[in-house]
Image (cartoon, rainbow over all chains, first blue to last red):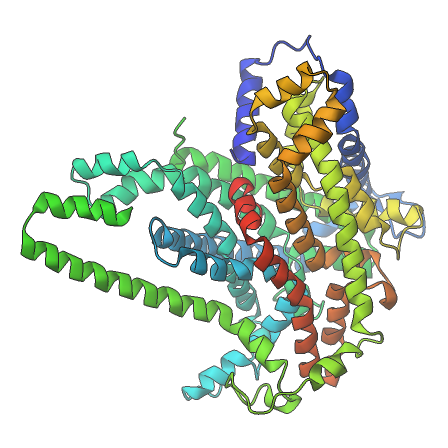
Amino acid sequence: MSSLGELRTLARNARRGGAKDTSRFPDNKAGYAFIAPWLVGILVFTIGPMLYSLYLAFTNYNLLQPPSWTGTANFVQMFHDPRLWNSLKVTLIYVGVGVPLQLALALGLAILLDRGMRGLGFYRSIFYLPSLLGGSVAVAILWAQVFGKNGLLNSFLALFGVHNAPGWVSDPNFALSTLIVLHIWTFGSPMVIFLAGLRQIPDMYYEAAQMDGAGTTRRFFSITFPLLTPIIFFNLVLQVIFAFQSFTQAYIVSGGTGGPSDSTMFFTLYLYQQAFTQLHMGYASAMAWFLLVIIGGLTALNFWLSRFWVFYDD
Amino acid sequence: MTTERLHVTTLAIGSDGWRRAHRRRRVTVSVLKHAGLIALSFVMIYPLIWLVVSSFKPNGEIFTDLSLFTSTHTLENYVKGWNSQGLGFQVFLGNSSLLVLGAIVGNLISCSMAAYAFARLKFRLRSLYFAIMLCTIMLPIHVVLVPQFIIFKNLGWLGTFLPLIVPKFLATDAFFVFLMVQFIRALPTELFEAALIDGAGQVRTFLQVTIPLMVPALATTAIFTFIWTWSDFFGPLIYLRTTPKFPVSVALKGFVDAQSTSDYGGMFAMSVVSLLPLFIVFAIGQRWLLRGIATTGIK
């Protein structure tokens, strides 16, 4: 079961008022001993910092002087900060275009590779490799060179007589697209998850459909797709959350600036600049909470929308 | 299995000519499918091949000569690139290795302990903790970024590896806890009951029964920790300030900062050096990696 599936079960049990045998905890001592490192970690490095950053969001803090309470000033400033809204727009385009395309490609290839395909292992390795390397600085560096003015792509285009192609990473109209392409390039990991999901669909469903005379298309839309929807949903939720936090690629490709003309200024990159180059720690904290609210909102929206298209077999 | 299903169809139809036509069509489809997949594989991998080949080309030829097979191989890029960031690259490789080692040891110990408790022990508030743990998988790190930075600053840990390693000993990578919980739950309960009946305490059951059985999950964790820590850029960028402490990822950034020098050859060569360990780990650990992402859906 996926982590989302677990949460569903927990929520369902809680609603039912289940797990009522709370009086019996035979392993209380051992349980707390084993969980101790995690418990310390969650308090010191997660819950404590979350509360503190919520407080900092309402202050002015530059690390040197103690934080001074400014009320909602940071949020008002955020509302009037065109660079922040631009960074949100850039991130939303990146997530909104990159994630669906990446998942569609992953799903398409998983279906193509599924069941009795010769060379499955080979293709799977080749397609998976980029998602393993995709987060590294080296690949981001490579990307800037592939899509540079004199880069690999333009040299290739020149072979076909296209000599006035733009410098993709240095042109504000295209820089973001190169990052989206990089994201799509890493479709291997969701593909592997889809492949695992496809393998769990019992053969008998297909055999029964075959008996009833269902064709390939019909079998896909009546069996494969519905049974795969929980996995597609799971991938969608997590990929949206992770893509929203992308940083390294934009940082390296733009040389840390988010340029040209803020066209690759991801929300996280702007947050980093506010926090660690401008030392606007209060403002950065406010931005972080805004980010949490946006990601939470998108996740909630995803869950709400899932009622209309995700099919649970249980 | 597809072939089997098609076979059933052909038998049902029965007609010989139909079957032959069908088989011919199937072969054509299969050839087209493989041709498409090979073409796609090539496009996917081409940038990486280009990176490796270019790292052996003289600086002037990288962007002018597209062919993968160059007559003028040179190791000059590796020699020049190795020392171009102020220090020899062995320093950065060493730093990355230390970070990776610390993170792996930390994750293996702390995550397996937490996972054992979540999967096998009944204690107060377990469900609540488990729900919190699952939520932290999805929590954007930026919400805790500034306070964590302040904590480490007050501890005097800035510029050391401690901010990047110590949290790993406190099971902050919830993915792995979850992965191991899934794994332990799938083990037969009889084993744990037998251990208890034989008088083993929880510590012994954990160390002598659970740990040996969950080696595959530990391997997956170790491999993923290796890859993520080796590639991690954000953490070291924030916490490490001086060149002698830089891991490979931050050291490579130096090539981007100083692009006026335009030592593309050196940059490519050191990019290859930095990707090589990832590639080796991928080649060796593929089996565990693929199983790991399939069960938890992590990258």
